[in-house]
Length: 305
Image 1 (cartoon, rainbow, N blue to C red):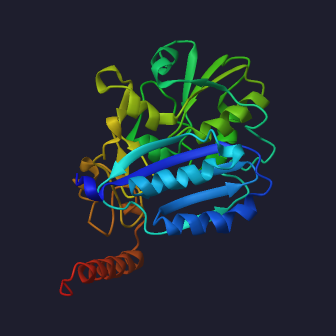
Image 2: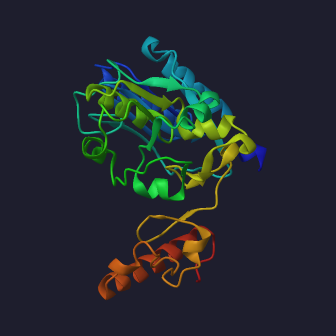
């Protein structure tokens, strides 16, 4: 990796009361742009959530700027690196929720589950009395998860409450341990489950990313890769880039075996979208792929395909 051009990727969130969140949007965006930072930061009454990338000094400056607000002075973040900028632009968006569960009455600022550090996680999820739940969406679980974890098979985090109500019973499931990419979804999920009467609710502090950063592979109970929402697609232990790519047509993460399938055609289809591809959609997708290649060839100084 070229250290001079290395991009520092910083992910952070904090549930905290920010009644003036809308007033923070423009100054924060201006400061990030001045530092040549790219990524997305979400602001809501319930807190802040973001992933940004830039040079080492720029990331340090933005984090210091955020922490200058006394409400965010203890804002924690996780770091990884990328060879090339993983985001194309900088956005600061105002939202109703910094992670959308669709239940505004669920407030992690009021109650939340018990945090479990990565060092304590293996022992907890190895307890046969503990039910382990992956709170991420189905396509994320598909490429990697913890041994023995349940997959709620949700398409959206909004589906999680329905899964809990239909599949879990606070009288039967006494101990519940949950995890997600960076920890934020579990804050909401644990708060929701406590409101539903579950007594012992645990969640992985810092999420899968902190676990992969701190736990060596030989001690790990993680299987596969961890999907991330940037151009790296997935990461492995040490937060090194994984092997997955995204289907240009449907956006599903693809492993090497997916690309070896006869249903895979670069830029056109993959095993996850092949059956839904009509002739009309295939024609439109072929043109979309052609335009994409044309654009990229021009950007590389080679206008001829």
